[in-house]
Amino acid sequence: MSWLTDPLTYEFFVRALTVTTVAAVVCAVLSCWLVLIGWALMGDAVSHAVLPGVVLAYVLGAPFAIGALVFALIAVALIGGLRDSSRLKEDTAIGVVFTSIFALGLVLISVTPSQTDLAHILFGNLLGVSTGDAVQVFVLAALAVVVLVAKRRDLTLFAFDPIHAFAIGLSPRWLSALLLGLLAVVTVTALQAVGVILVVALLIIPGATAYLLTDRFARMLLIAPAIAGACAILGIYASFWLDASPGGVVVLTMSLVFAVVYLASPRHGVLARRVARRRARKAFVGPASPAPEGNRA
Image (tube, rainbow, N blue to C red; front, side):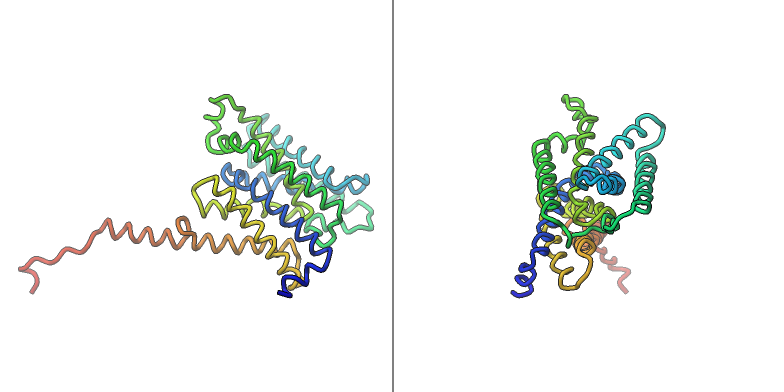
């Protein structure tokens, strides 16, 4: 029991554990929609685009969350505008916008005189999370979860069939903008936990893992947060005892769970599909016919 109770005597560990679990759970809920729609690259873009906003917020003395949220929304607007006003496809627009904004952030870090190591923006600073940072994470996470729960039916219909959503009076454009705005909010929530580079893992891996375990979206919304929360807790404990990067260990734990599910999922795993193919082949070929009496010699 000392392996579980000893770390809890440290205030920084309890704060890191709480913030990481909350960020992982809210990211996992949103990741279900991102996986279904195919917006994995969009999550990557938004997570990288917040970097200059965080740097400028530090320069101006404003909360990091405000600067990150502003630039996340700017990135979403630029991607949508570039996609709709040119012949470029969405993946190309995403690549142009997020690399440009991320490069701006790197330049701002290099020219900004600071006694604070702004590199923790890239890799997270869980052990240095303050009470104010934790409150920001909780408020943004609560806001995102409330909106997702309230609009879950509309967003689910948009994810599966946007044409049908339009036919019954919903606006796919508005729902897309709402989902992108929530993506920006959730990205800012997870930024403090694992940093810019690893945020995309929290936004994709839990949903992808749940997608391999069930064919029902309602169950997927339960499985993904459960996996993310368990991996967050296990990862934080492992990082404490291994003296390793907390964010990296959490994401690595999620990756290991995904690998196990990918191989051993009861219906969609690699092993299950191989067994199903063998059975189908045997059923198609059928049992070998006995040789005629005259040919048995």
